[in-house]
Amino acid sequence: QVQLVESGGGLVQPGGSLRLSCRASGFTFSRYRVTWYRQAPGKERELVASISVTGGKNYADFVKGRFTISRDNADNTGYLQMNSLKPEDTAVYYCRAQLLTLVSYDYWGQGTQVTVSS
Image 1 (spheres, rainbow, N blue to C red):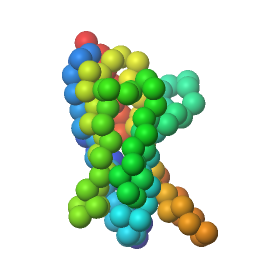
Image 2: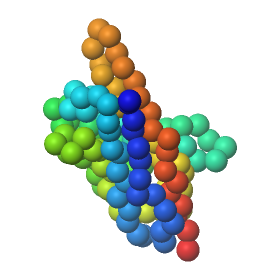
Image 3: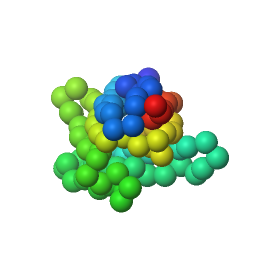
Image 4: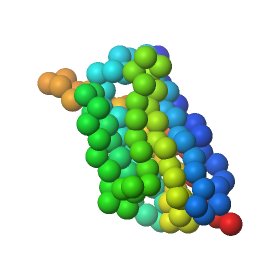
């Protein structure tokens, strides 16, 4: 059974940190690109960061220098380290895993809530 399960969200004060995890099962995680998205109330889902199968990383401008994406293929887990959090980072964060070949596969997690507030 294919699953992507996010965890690590919660309530944090401005300037604080959280580390989100995205644990995969039921497929060969190391072959999949991992992307984190977020969606705030009333807004469209937006890309936050992605990491390729070879470890190449891309970030949205609004998180550069604050967030770090990583992966542990041995543990079938992707991570998003979030530092210097701001109230505008409040959103549901989603993990996505994509196999980008002739036959593509695309999996999403259920999301984890991150709330930045004093």
